Image (cartoon, rainbow, N blue to C red; front, side):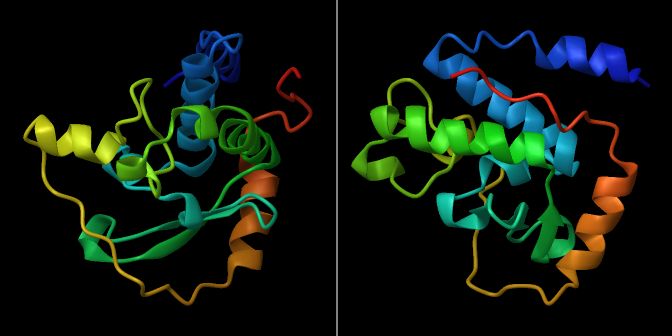
Amino acid sequence: MLTSDQVESLLNQADVETHLGIRDRAMMETFYSSGIRCGELIALDVYDVNTDREVLTVRQGKGNKDRVVPIGTRASTWLRKWTSDVRPNLVTESSAQSLFVSKNGADLRSLQEFLGHARLNTTQIYTHVSIQRLQEVHRKTHPAKPDIKPSK
């Protein structure tokens, strides 16, 4: 298991002076904050993330169930930077809904299919979860320091 300092060192490896570095930092912060799986991260669409409420919706995750997952302030901040400052410069018509895209505009879900991984399906069904309780547990127990913000 990594220590908090080791995780911080890993997170700081992304070159946030570049578009893809900001994307990578937002992805790593989302992983670290939420504990979602790689396939779940790749399947996220822009409408699955609510940075104001600090939650994301995982659709058809483990057990083919939808769930709402809390994310921390720091992850939300990096996701806002990605979606407002960088993503609009990379998104194409074919990747318009995907949260994370690559430098040629391809959505990561299409790349996943191209590589022969399992197809990810999404639904419009939301899970009924007490997100306030989950957020409180997240705030109290997650080791990330919330005061670290992306540079402007």
